[in-house]
Image 1 (cartoon, rainbow, N blue to C red):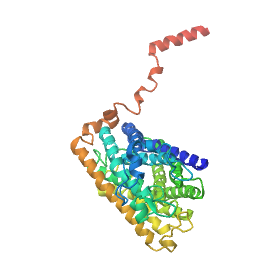
Image 2: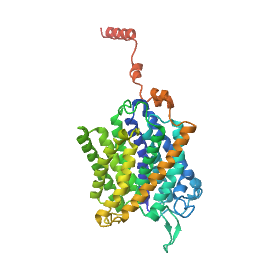
Image 3: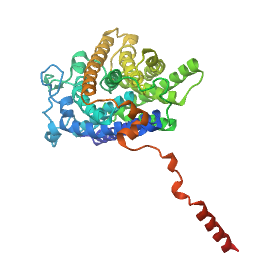
Image 4: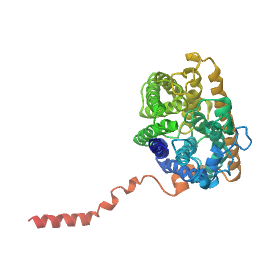
Length: 446
């Protein structure tokens, strides 16, 4: 065991955990005031629900021995409850298995929370929680096995445990979750939007973000936590983590500038919401590529992602799908851009050691990236649509128009985020009482 590597992974796991409350604030500030609590609750519910499912069978499904030996699904019962891992052989020579399991748990939690932004203001909370549990079980855990579970080999190089097909057979590069997290969540978000339909009055009467400072705070927490998300995936405090850390910084920086430039050219003004959205778009795009490119490559990916995502979020008005908080435009599009651009900008001088098209590697890595991205997109989109459709047809996924008009916070949670009418009311006295106390005070001075 290496105490430094173990400490690094545990700290990074805590940083990734902070990203979920950060996402809650980011999403919460973007909705109307009467929907802020519902957005916070949808993210917080992911922390509770997916955390428990991960211990029960999620880790085993994602990182257990493949049940058929073809890289599709880990055994859900192999590490059920994770009790067998107590005192078991370590995952590697430097960190204990539980450190890795805790780190990956935070990925699962955040991925589920990401989806919620697409259906802001119109998804019932109970069915959302049920969908989240089913989606994590049937979509995220298997896809995480495809992308993150690598074959285990013995000293002779023989495979002793089969991992996921995308990671091992296709050999697509996804260092920290461009496919498993962002394309996966973005495709699910698109499926939910198609099933639930647009908000009442959209796009004319959906309102503007009610609290932009909250959005910026959430974006800042996401950026801060993303260093753990990406650099922590190195699983050691070494050269790879350092390169990834810097690439994560400059990828987001470049994307923010590109988004603001697009806004300035198209609409005449750069906006605060655009800056925050550009940061997230850059972080999404650099996630799969951060170990495969140089810092200049990270800047290029960030510029492309920032500009393309800024344009993509406007497609919902032309194509008539109400992606409330631009999960499709930022996470699905950004994830696709980052995953595919590995095939162009990968450099052999980066830790991954693979050359892309622009560095003399031809299209070999590009087709691998394409297969991985398309497979995850198709699987998540189809299965997510089916789950949402079944829930809508059986127990009802969407709130009714009366509840939507009254506000989803009041309808689903019987509370509101702000009580403007009550501000200062308990500190004021009736006018007669206030006048009497003033007279008494003046008499004492006489």
